[in-house]
Figure 1 (cartoon, rainbow, N blue to C red):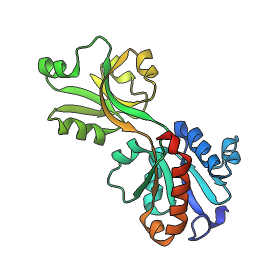
Figure 2: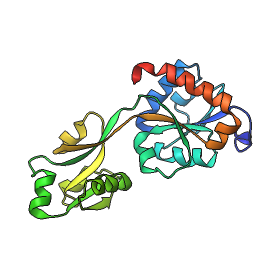
Figure 3: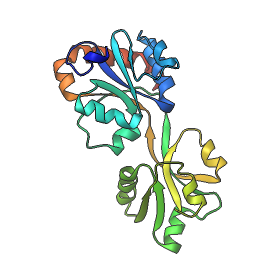
Figure 4: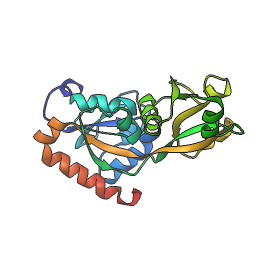
Length: 223
C-alpha cells in the first residue's frame, strides 16, 4: 500500500486527525463501516488500510496542507484550523458535529475585565496559538491588542506575566479553572468538518459525494 500512495487512483485517501479528535473520528468511521481497528492499536504506522479508504493520520493542523495539495483527497479537522488557515483552497463539505469546543478570550480570575483593562491601562497583550483568528476578532471590534504567538502550554502566559490574557480553545473549561483563569468572551464555536481537495471533487465526485452523504447521515444526531 505504501508504494502506491503517491499515485492517482485506488481508494480515496482520508486525512485523519490525531490528538483529541481521533477517538470521535474513528467512532464515526466505524458507523459507516470503515475498518479502524489498526488505527486504534499501538502501531507507530501513520497510514492504514481502512478497506474502502486509505487512512492517513496526522496532526489536525496539517490536514489542510495535505488536502489542498491533493496528497489526501478528503480530510477531517476542526473549524478552528480551517478558519485560522482560511486561505487554503479546499471545499468544506460536512459539519460532523463532533469535537465540539469554543475559542474564547480568558484572563486571570480576579483581574479586571478586558474592556475595563483597555479603558484603564490601554492595549492588552494576548497570547494565542491562533494569531489570525485573534487578529480578525479584535480588529472587527475596533480593539487594539498586542498578540504573542505561543505554541505550547498557553495557560502559562498570563500566570507569569507574558500576557494579560489568552485566546484559546476550551472544551469543558476545566484547564482554565485549574490554572486560575476565567472565560471572558466567546470568539468562535468549533466542531470537526469534512473537507475535500477541489480536483478530487471534480474527478471523483461520485465517491466523495457518497462518502459525504454517509458521514452526514451517521452524524445527524451530533449536530
